[in-house]
Image (cartoon, rainbow, N blue to C red; front, side):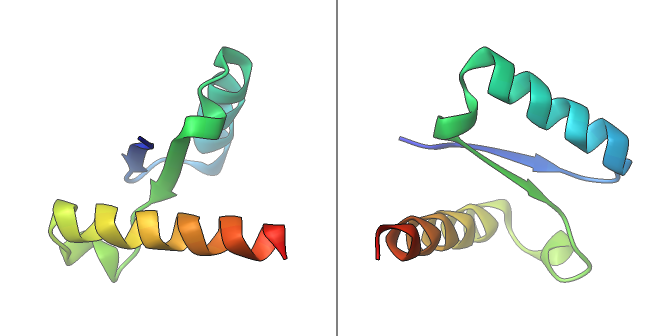
Amino acid sequence: MKKVMILHNFERQDYMRILECLRGSGAYEDTIVAVTTETTINWKVGDLIKELLIEDENIKNERKS
């Protein structure tokens, strides 16, 4: 099962450091990292996670083809 990390109000350099830490820990492949947007900030967390999982699956399928 995928893990989901949702970041809000992070500076780009901080976001990039988080990604580097995830890669270094080996957790990157199992983790979806997303940042909030003007649209998603008002979504219910469950709805956002569902959308992120769908997007992740679509990206995975595109890479296979």
